[in-house]
Image 1 (cartoon, rainbow, N blue to C red):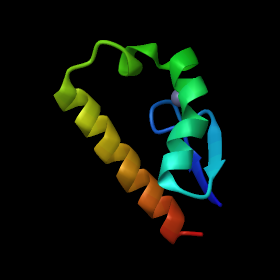
Image 2: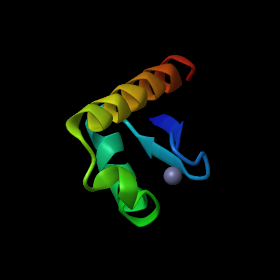
Image 3: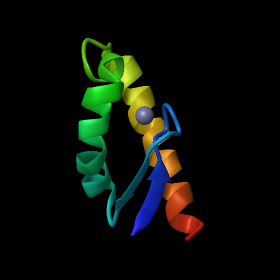
Amino acid sequence: MVKLMCIDCGQVEFEAPTFNEMLTVMMPHYFDAHQDIMSGQSQEIQEQWMERLTKAFNQAKESR
Ligand SMILES: [Zn+2]
């Protein structure tokens, strides 16, 4: 399992074995606490967010 703190507020810890499952696990929190990121963002901002998450996930995976 990879453990990852929310990359936007650092208040919530998520745990999932793969990147895709991590996304699924994070979604309820993001819809609840980070609506601004989920809705109405430009593709560029969404891509930057995905890039940040990928990096954070890979770092968390390596530091297990
Ligand atoms: Zn958060």
